[in-house]
Length: 317
Image (cartoon, rainbow, N blue to C red; front, side, top):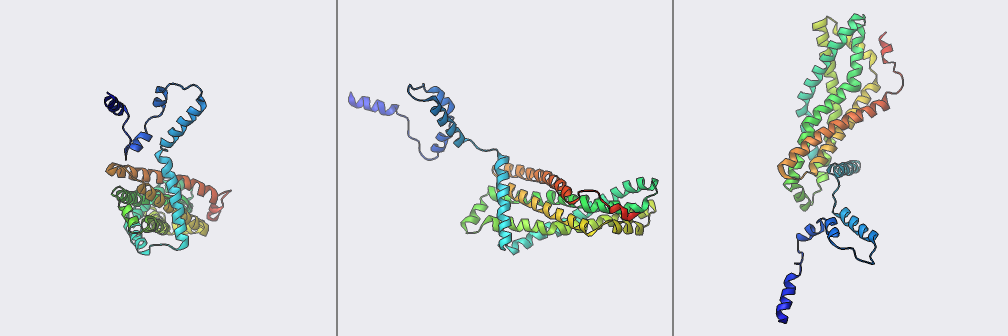
């Protein structure tokens, strides 16, 4: 009889928690379990609530966008530290420069050329009615240098290069290739992310300057062929209106936008999970977030660089 009772008591005991079941046991809902337990006399209700809240906070996960934003900030700091210390993998940087620069040049120049022609059509039509055709080149040059060229170039880079970075690093993260790099003694930030960031920061301003020249050249061509406005008039007006500061601010914007694209795309790809679907979601999200941050940064940089009244158009009188 005694042995039977002992065996029965042992069978009624809850089975111990082992291995992976520990995490499932910890993450189990605690509030329903607490409600199922009767209130014990002599025990403070506040202490019970504190225990419940503590367990809930330990098991709760932060929103995905929050920890990805934190990861992007931390990653940006790590990349900046490595660049300042000179810890750069130059071979990988050169390979990424070929992807960001020459392979993106055709699309960027084509887009900049058509942007210049579209704005030339609008400006010449309106300015000709006022007899201010000689001012078209100056206004167009200011618009291209200060705003259009940096933003358009960055949009091209975000769509082509940013998506490639996010997809590539996302695939590596899902297939655990980044973990393999750590096992081999290589830091993924040094080997993968810093070269991509440096490539975007170098190629962005260069592409921006080339797109500006392309936009002005196409504007001169369309003005000459369609509206019989001499190309020399457009060029002279542009040269008189634009200053060195306009070109410097344009390059600074392209440099900042390149850093934003690379950091966001690499961090979103580096923190990818969930297989092939996660890679696709990270790629789309990286491009969208990059574009939003580009426009936000463009506003603050323009507000910083161009305060007060401008006098660029006075040179066109």
